[in-house]
Length: 313
View 1 (cartoon, rainbow, N blue to C red):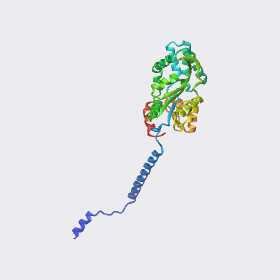
View 2: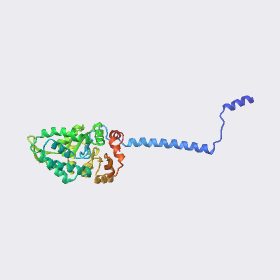
View 3: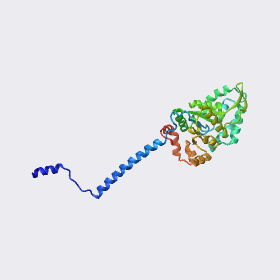
View 4: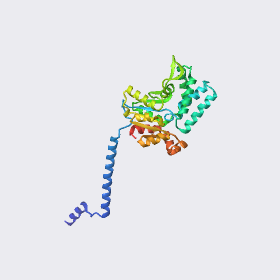
């Protein structure tokens, strides 16, 4: 009988009294499990609360991108001037003026109204008497020679994210519409809004139709296009580097400051707009971001597009 009892005792687990340390360990484990479960629930709820942006298949949304220093480093009009000089459209003294304006623009990172007006006047006088078709063809060549390598990969990725979401993407720029259209087509964008130079029977007159597409005029162009296309501006996005484009950025529900000048950076921070800076090195330091972050932004253009699909920032 004793032998049987002993065997049963061996098969039956012994009940031990819990020590203070084991109690503490158990409570800590339970608390960790509870906290982990709670965090997982919060993440799930957060993901549901933040829809993807751009929104896939949203036909009432579109994106509007400024060109100079937003999509492309420098000013398109100045690069176009270099190409025209190469083709003997004007003399060396005019090229020197273009070069100075471009250097100032790149160093300052902002648009100077006087410089921009001089550039436009010069361009109009240069193209006067030439055929529109001729300048369009030359624009294709100039894009390959001077502009293609100056496209910011990060901004290009943002535009591609909208295209991948099935949305239309337009350039909106003070540059001549012929140049803007070439760039938009080469980047696979929907189209471009730009300054329109007057032409009669396909020949430039040296005058503008209206005024340059700059500042408030950009906002009016975007508003008109949105109305014609049946877009909901509250669901649209706009991207620019310049405080001159605050009217356009303020129109949409998703404004982005890209490589912003000082005034736009302050305005964007005050209104909690999204910021992206794809400049590197000394320029990145000048605007107050780590140089490494600038380098990473350029190198990570594709990653930026993927991230835009995953969650709204």
